[in-house]
Figure (cartoon, one colour):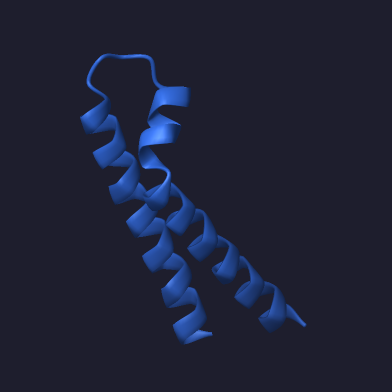
Length: 62
């Protein structure tokens, strides 16, 4: 049962990471108000990639 919960958490992390990569510009416009939106969207894409990799590693090793 614990293994299923951990795998579900991994899938959710992958989903959040992919959504952050795909909608980075929309999220940066909504949450950040400073002028340089390219840096904010690049930061969100990098963060989404790292989160997706963490979720993938959880699925791979568990």
